Image 1 (spheres, rainbow, N blue to C red):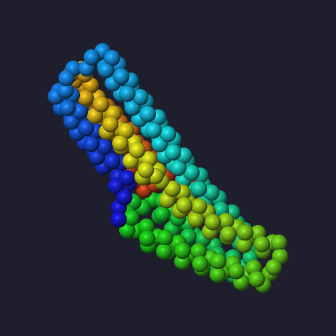
Image 2 (cartoon, rainbow, N blue to C red):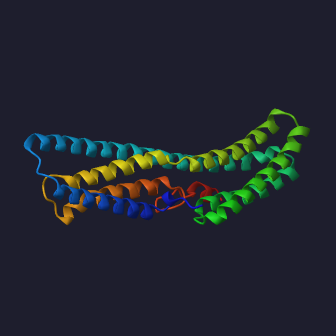
Image 3 (spheres, helix red, strand yellow):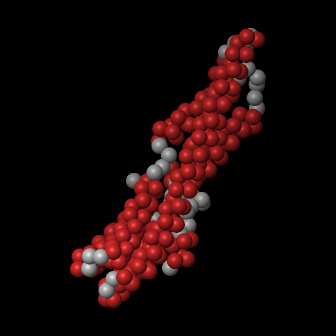
Length: 247
């Protein structure tokens, strides 16, 4: 099932509509109540300011979480390229026939890793992952007999390099699964809606433009967070520059 958070503009539209509705509901309720006295107005302004401050803090923390996860995905892409490139050199330590076979498999494996980063179609990801797992099994099946027959420090380097290749893919996959928790999105949504409701409910009469300012600004912030947090959707994505250069 597709994750709505993988579509930043959908996130923008949903949050914008929700906050607009909350603002106009607050405005409607505000027109029905009696006018606040000076003390009540001060208390209301304090609550409203505190809510907006909390919203800003939550957005800031969540944005930092998204950027951290994006940087992690970039680092693991670089680590994958380094691991594959190092192992491509180390296979010279294996018997000639095994080394040639491993090089052929590493080239095909590299193509699959590039495809993993570049594809946007979720239906293709399953096939790419299956092909990657099959190539990993083939790579290990070639290295293992050579390591068993030649148990020395030189062969161990090639085996260790292959282990790094396989581990780097697992680390990358874990980083792509590491997304902002739904609870954080729910908390941001609740505070944003409450802030818009309070703006509409305020004592001073507000026109349509002023009621729309906060929802638009906050929704743009949510769009940016969703874009950075989504590994495969949106505009801001990790490109396999190091893997392509290695290829």
